[in-house]
Amino acid sequence: MNGRLLVYGATGYTGRLVAQHAVETGLDVVVAGRDPGRVAELAGELGVEARAFDTTDAVEAIKDIEVLLNVAGPFRDTARPLMDACLDAGVHYLDTTAEFATFTLAESLDERATRAGIMLMSGTGWDVVPSDCLALHTTRRVAEPHKLTIALRVTGGFSRGSLASAAGIEDLGTLVRRDGELTRLEAAVPRTFDFGNGPEECLPAPMGDLITAPKSTGLGDVEVYLGTDSGFTDTSDGPTADERAAGHYFALAEVTGRDGQIARSLVTTPTGYTFTQLSSVEIARRVLRGQVTPGYQSPASAYGPELATTIAGTTIVDLD
Image (tube, rainbow, N blue to C red):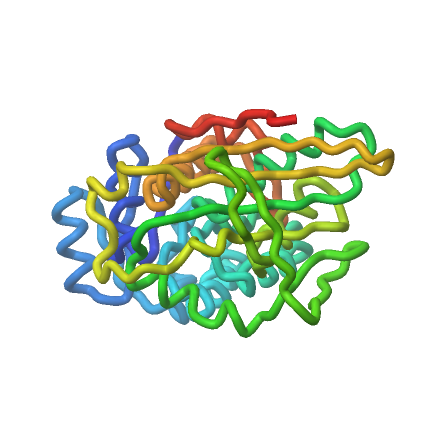
């Protein structure tokens, strides 16, 4: 691995976790962001190079970089200019977004990225690595898969940046995939799912899986649900190390075949920030090793369902 990884937004809560782990993994890391003082301070702590630049002036700053990992939310402000810069500079682009619009943006740039020979991948963290890998795993268990349903259960506190990224999710309404098309339902009808501790109520949610799951599985009928107790609790500067180490997150996938066959599988992971720290660096490491498919890719379309279980503390269990 001779290439360099630039972590943009490295001074934020998630960015700092990711940058630290990337350095510990032995990657050649550059930390970057908008604030010269904060970026220089972090670079000094980690013993790496610092670069301060605005997203609108990124092309010159990244020309010697192999992979850019964007951890700077809200991604509605940073994703487009950084994707454009990567396409112009020939740099592979990754981000840790959970914002629906960022997934649709990356998908829309597929042809341009393919021509440029670079890979665009949004959702290299808990959104959407475990659920995307689980979706492909479960789909492969059904002879003639037709419909995919994903349910997510998350708990715990969130950083200021994560809450900013989550703002406006209600405005998207109730979205599902029907025959390959995004469709807005008139009403959000709840369903119950069992993540291992009895039935829990979940509501349809406009998550990135509505974009990534069709890419990875080829299915045109997709629904995503979020547990109703999956609240966004403000912990200001983000969860402590002890809080990150406590508990688990869950995703359940249900695939229905054309013959009525139903397969269900469950993925259990560390809490979201811990998983994101590990998974985003693992994906960056693979890209630096040349494991790249040009164009827009989801985690599972690029690296298969096994990617999730390479992350420490992550298991997939077939329920039926």
